[in-house]
Image (cartoon, rainbow over all chains, first blue to last red; front, side):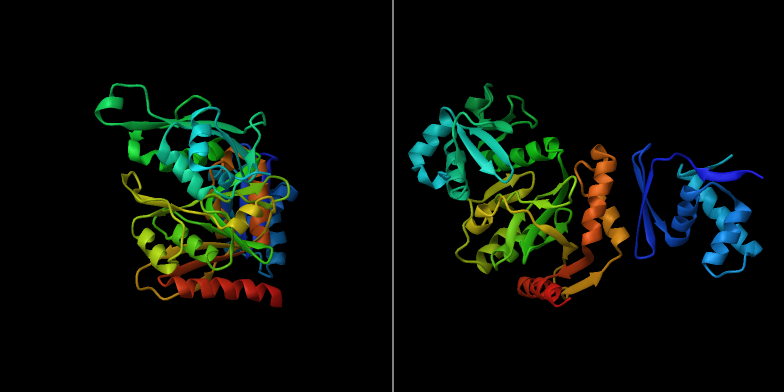
Length: 90
Length: 307
């Protein structure tokens, strides 16, 4: 299975009030992310991961069952982050 | 160090016509030349408390306000602003000479002073902590700023908030406060002894006038401040005074949009703004009554001591 990883190593992340602000040094773009998207990105900055591993680790962190629904939600957010050129799949 | 008020009206005009003056405003030294009497009078009135440096000293900006050398000189007099000999603006009607100097000085700072993150915002301070007031035109930012500094808040800037890259400290640049249209009468009623330049009508911003910065703010212009609050003000006729907390992340994004050089500074811009936001509580503020607005800001400042 392909792994998700951050598109480049030049991402700066700050978190306040359960939201995240991320700066992509390569593009110069700044994005506002909600807490869920921010934590997914944070996890991928720490280490590339397959989606199943993300579902398991984030499910445990959020005290949520690693259900098919959680899988769909995380996958949808990964696609959104990919559209922002923050993550990619290899 | 001598200040502008040590020169007589004719001396100041003569200096401006010939070698110019070297004016210290916050961290900048500006070499100003102008043969125009209204420019000399504006400087004499509004920059009376500012230090004058020696003629041979370094200057960050060399500016001149003069008549352009065209045939219009005789038909409908105009005035032009030059920075290092180049004009960033088209000429304006002659009676706009002093406002043009003010706009030109803002342009010099916003286009060149990239050792700072520059936010299009007013910034005032009390008790060591500053309030940054980013806002688009029409939000009542300058009116609110003028009212607050007339009641004991220190003016760091009405227009350009300078955040030092590296430590996130706010560097004062106290200069005249620019008021527009109805705000001019409002402030004259609010503070009858206010020192203000003559109103100039039919500018691109409508009728404008400039308010003298408090002398104490000018004297303390080398004294940096720590960010304490970021407040987005909005004047709304008849509205109740409301101060509504907003998430810091939203504050970050809105301030980033109000910066002149956030993108230009890249990572430094992000890190510097993050320092400001980390240190600040963020609010949206709606007001229609200046006295209530001042009471709100004073209460906010007083509450910082009880934490």
